[in-house]
Image (cartoon, rainbow, N blue to C red; front, side, top):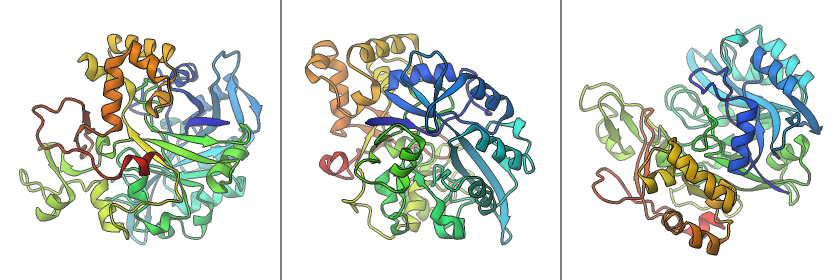
Length: 424
């Protein structure tokens, strides 16, 4: 079976997250997106863990669903965790996704972690614990736990982050590097950028949303398409850690990395945005205030990459760069993606044509779409041909994917790899 998964999201118990992030809303919006598997998120939070334990029932090995739900949406027990620690006198900050198959294993982990953090303070706990020490705890509890370094390039909290990360995955995880299940691109990078590091050749590359809201322009905005022999924790683990023809990653659905919050360097307060080349010329300083700019993902990739930007890996699953359907419809209707008008149109489209992710990967009835929604089809074709304008994100500001080419400065057209290389 081929299924879309989003294994990085949060609950209503995480800071700066929507209060609508409950299991019912996640299940409903996932069905519109075409997502079959979600992570519960925030499984270390006592109140949220109690809620998921009450509301979910196990239907197969490590696979859960809402009791009495009519939606064909399933959950895995997991969440994102933050470690802030000092190693050799240098402060490191790293986020990672952890997934376990059973409630009793989660309880064992939470009991251990409560020694290092007030788990009730945030859905994504902050541990004063070296990530290697965390991994020792985790894999002592369950050797086949899923461990995925999250959004590995973002500046502040990641594996390769410019501000507090490492220069090598081996440096970061030491003797536990073999336990890493996969690495997550994050919104500001795509697989092609990650292929440029030979040290990542042995690790699967996945993409998920890091959603702080269940709305369709957040949930599943990045996703991974898996082929599984059966819907189970063990088969999903194999698809990432030990892929074969029956259990593997088929593709990922990606943001245009320019749309992410940290693609370029810059200083948000002064509205200064730099390409890696311009940032280097300016000695990584803001020309307005003289302070240091936040060094973004593209600059960091350029610093650590051993391969050219046009490097193509034939052994990797393909990927497709796109943008959420409500954002496309919002531009079509000249309205915000969260407006009632846009959501009403969105519901009509997915009910008549099919789930959003199928639409975004061109798996839909072209004739029906042309007959019912010809303007939307034209927008999708523009994006497929990459006939768009991108305003790169920087220093915490989302970038923009623009379908109207008029009157936009400091933008660029995408032209990195040929469609046939990206989409298979």
